[in-house]
Length: 372
Image 1: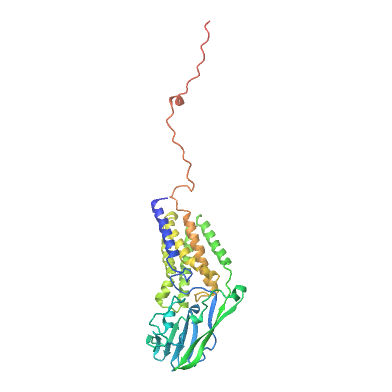
Image 2: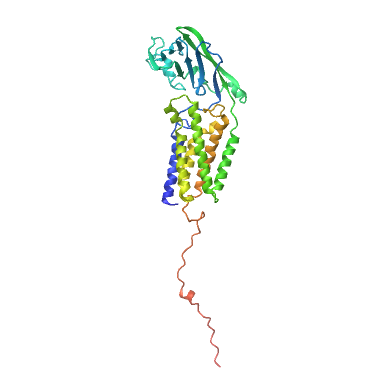
């Protein structure tokens, strides 16, 4: 292997390690942060809360609730200890910085007690967060926090309502109907059809790159990866209600895969197979480790963080796994130095110059005949 190719392999391994360990969780939506696939569905009961002009829905797979107030009244969301937490009205949306819920709801999983400044008995200190009468917040009362429920362990292949929840409200300072909803266990599906599809892609691509159509095979695979990464990003951006920056971070590995696929496509189009091998290897590893492996959970999870149909979302993950691994394995076949055989020839000792006896063998001498 040449020094250049050796450096390419080391770079590929380094990039793969960064993709594998650089983002916390790695069970998320293909990037840093983002909504995670799951098997629990959070729903707001139809018609809840039953206040004219007020609508509530579950967003981001139950990670947050969204309350929109189109009425002239002021709606107050109460916190975990009955204290005013959010205020939504014609003058906008406000958050009570003294409410313990303000600190607790900043993370999906509670990480500790609220700060000392949080006091549910203190007079509210309202901080304006939006001019629009729309509030979006994470509420620990509206999603499943415990381990696997007993009913799910006993019948994992059946749907089960595992929790009924409610969030109390005030309307112009007076008690109002609460937001009510449920959390339902939705059984996962088998990932094996998609895994077999990914393996078929890998095997097919690995075989084709050893034939005369190697260039076309790599180019088709790279176009497929680029299209898959674009579709995955569109689905995530349309689905999520997070900020543009947050959605960008959640799709950082998809974007990296897209950029690499386009760059590698140009390399494959103008270079020899041997010359394109290092770039193809790096791209394959980044796609497989960066977007394929983290998305593996989406092959079975019932709730996916995408606006695309579930089958399409699983197909995109299958493509990242199959095509990414196919590029990496196929390229690895051609990492040896050009012009050498795959098997090293047997080493033989150099032949020394022939000795005088070897070059001029002695003539056979006949014994002297006896004298007459």
